Each structure stands twice: as structure tokens, then as C-alpha cells.
Length: 259
Image (cartoon, rainbow, N blue to C red; front, side):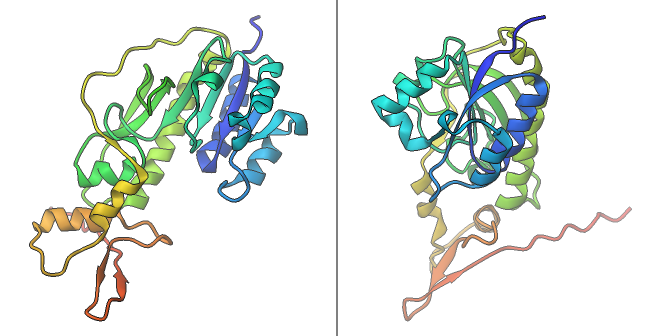
């Protein structure tokens, strides 16, 4: 019987919490955990409790940028790191600590929608959507692909409904792919094809303001409004004559076609 791969998990949000359990159930030897700092972590306390690791094996994200933090990670002797919705770019000196590499699950069908808000851009740009398990390299979501799962963008999707289905696709991808990895089997890997798209977090600012006197195609306007509908967060907005902002959310109700 093969020894489980010694793994450090970088986790945030729902996929971080549920993905941690998936990796453990698959047989990964989870030796360390990295979480967001308390001010920006989501489900942080639940993730730490679920990992059930000694305090000296739990790291806040800023520690990865210090020589002492990197040395503490090195001392664990992990072979592999897995990033689960971890929101910080990993430096090369961290990546180089792991002989079997660093893997990431990203809620997009790479090379489409690298970076931030893939659920938004799949709707606005009408690009393919899905989930990808890939290796991390020096770029942002540019590493070799291990496995993918496509998700259909429905005409009645909002940014929120699509995001939830992309989360599910990411978790399903982990369930299907990770047992073999945890046993130490080298995963298939293939370079990403040329092209694709990439977005930074600030890019949504260019679509969020609806200019009342501008002409829009109905399809384009609806796509922006539904893509930015993700309650409780504010969505797209317009400005009134007195300078106030009015935020918009779109409700989409699908009626079955007549037989």
C-alpha cells in the first residue's frame, strides 16, 4: 500500500471547507493548512477546526511572504500543495518547496476567464464556463491542466446561480480526480491552449455603471445586470441627477415553453 502524499492545503470559502474533507476522504496526508487572515477569510474558523492540525501547522496567508514562514512550511516536508479558492497569488519560492507541485482548482474552463470573477465574465463575454484542476506556475491560472468539467451557462443564470454551480463543479472535479493523486499517481497534465481571457478584480468597475443616456443592446444590458446580481452584494448601478447611486438586481423567472 502506497504512503499517502504529504499535502499542505490552502483553503478559503465553501470550496476550501468542503474540498478539505474531499481531500482527506480521498486519502491525502494533510500535514499543514494555510488560511486567509481573519479580516478577509471566509469560513476560516470552520476550515481550521475541520483540519484539526496543531497550531504550528496552521499558517495565515501573510506568513508565506516571510522567510520564517517559508522555512516553517519547508520543515513540514510536504510533497504537494493544493489551493482551494485561496485568494492570494503564490510566489515562486513557495511553489518550489513542493516536489510534486502546487495544484489549484479554479471555477473556469481555462484558458477562458483566468483571474477574478469568472462567473461574471462567462455571462458578459459569453465565454465557456466550467471548473479546472491545474498546476500553478509563475502566471495567474496559466499552469498545465489536469482535469476539467464544463458548465452550461443558462439564459436565466445570474452571477450567483452560476457561481454556485461552478463551486459544485469544482468539488465534483476534486472527488473524481484526487483519489489517484492522493495515492501518489502522477496526474495527466497538458499545457493550456493559446488564447483565452483573463480579468483582474477591478475590471468589473468598467461594466458596473449603467449610463442612463447610453444606448445598449437589450441582450448586453441584461447580461450585465444578471451577471452582477449576487445578493447580498451590490450589483450594477446608475447615478441619479443629484449624484446618488441606485443599485440594480435582476430577477429571472423561467417559464416552461408550451407543449
